[in-house]
Image (tube, rainbow, N blue to C red; front, top):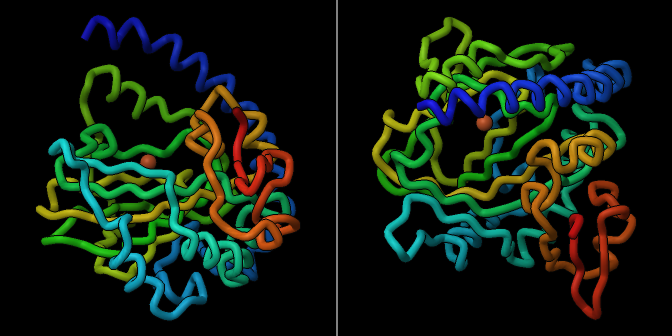
Length: 281
Ligand SMILES: [Fe+2]
């Protein structure tokens, strides 16, 4: 408890500094964003994996691949940045996906990270309380390719843009007390998952995982999309960038599909032999 309290002023200071950077970039994004054409009204939308990635049968293929796995050591979460080639191809080829993310974030949007996160219930207690991810506008795409039992749901409070980020002192306070804000709000939407569903939402919205709602496992690939200039400005200050800002990930796709792809930021791309890396070492 004492340790948490002592860490709080440092964390607050960091959040205050990041707030300035985030608001600067997000304000620009608000100026250029075309609210009429955005299919993510209020920062939130539910789709199907196969439709958004323009690949019929993709969910089925994901379900039958090696990414449908759980930790062997009995842990509750399986993380992996080893994304199979067929998923990379779909992400890089889909015009639907690109149109949604560029309409919402702006022309400087980039794919910022992509990973497998398979979660058995009871995993992340802190994400059970209302929070935002403290990076301002950023889209996360949750591709739920399979479920076991009744997995936990996600609860979000949709909100129209502009919705400029500011430090959530209520959440910080709750965290210091090792407590969680789990109040119910009339505008909240609970999203349950069945295989093949995907949820797109802006992690700047207040959201929470409802981990006790279910008793099952969610097999999911998560892709993140953010303004590349903002992500670079937040490097080392917030978990942005490939591998959550902690290194590079391997893109397993043909080079010609990667080079000049508008969703890929060439400034963080490196090629070594026949391998393509994405991120900052
Ligand atoms: Fe979150």
